[in-house]
Image 1 (cartoon, helix red, strand yellow):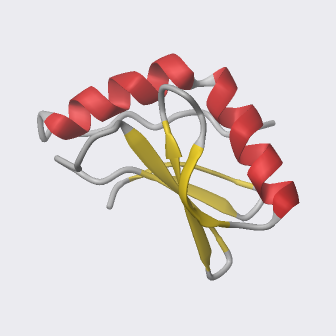
Image 2 (spheres, one colour):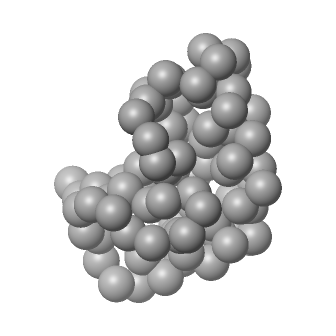
Length: 86
């Protein structure tokens, strides 16, 4: 699964040709959650509350890039890296 971004111990990934709805995976330690790209709602899993807040802040800042990454993944194209939180 390609890595899109990494910050504060959080790793953001997206699978190639994954199922709908458009989403990404956030990993923090041994925990993982899945976030809908369009609504930024958690659709599966759970990570620490502070890490969840950081993921949501990052995703809100990069929602258009996440949508583009989803299309690239669906088309089996290389995924562009997305800047981390500062």
